[in-house]
Image (cartoon, rainbow, N blue to C red; front, side, top):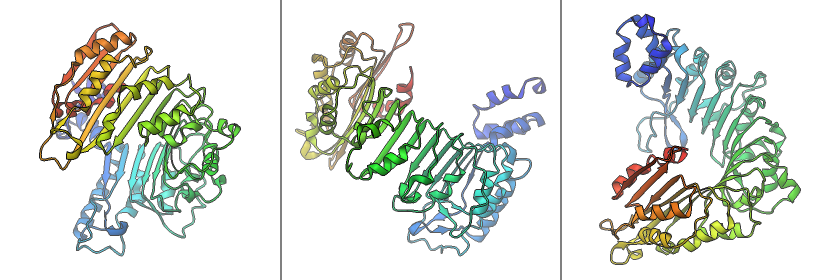
Length: 482
């Protein structure tokens, strides 16, 4: 009977099974044995060494090396290798400075045979390598993998003195991510020639861009790139803008960094950077660079206090195009309880056409910040919100979250009686008739509410910190639902 059912249907059924259940199914008959291999061997985890002090690679024992090589033989065999779609190379563990195992004189005895055989994974689409060493053979073999579309490199090493001139054909990657120590100034120049500007759609560079050299001429123009993440020295804006100009088609950009902006470029130069940008994520410090893009509709701000963000926004001409804002504030003193509805009102005055607003406040408190071992902050905030008409009537989705971290307390503080959240929901939906999603989180109480397309409302709530923490884990998925 199983031979009469298409493999695609069996794969759909088997994809919900646990690995142990898949193994049980695989021994049932030959058809299931072959079908389940596509699931059992879809991902290969490889751990070629541990990482010791100063990032020195440490090999396992000789016996373990032999065992790992035997495992590599199995995964790269003709019967198994074609099923591998994704692969992760990571250290087995982070060794402590007190480990008795010495750094091996030949630390890549496992990694080198892996890269020699990686071409056997003919269906490999995704590769993630952490603390990996790359030589000419490794880079050359990556070029020989036409199915590889996603490559993520985290804290890598490149063999010194080896020529990469023979690598003439770039990879067919659509997504490339590289993370490196910001103090390092070498390595990335080997990867840029491997990227095909016509294929790449997403690029994440979380390292010091100076590893490309003083000139940005080494970076070609990537006309089809749509998502970009950069980690920048904000004190070198002229260089940063030269880098950004290499990606004229970017729609979504994430920018973090260090330092302070030294000077702002002229308006003409600003307008030439990311002319199609629709979403900005990152530090508030360079928000003025993109704030008035006619195409920009969504912003996510990090690193600011409410006072700094409001001051920065008030210094700019009111943008009528911004419709979605996400902001996170993290403070370390009880005075942040002064964040109130007046602050919200000011934010909405600056951004009058919001349809989505997501705010998360994390407040760290000590015993001196609390009066009578009680924490009334979230309750007071939501009670005030019920009596103050600060929300714009255009809102369709709203999330307000308070999270508290307590230090030097013998026990969790008592919480005032939670606000009447159902009443607050009714008040907010009346003030904002277009409201479709509502998330009210006070750390010790929570209400989530959603109106479906057919008008049916779905609601859930929690009345203690443990339940709130559990529901909060699914917030990202819940918020993305439309």
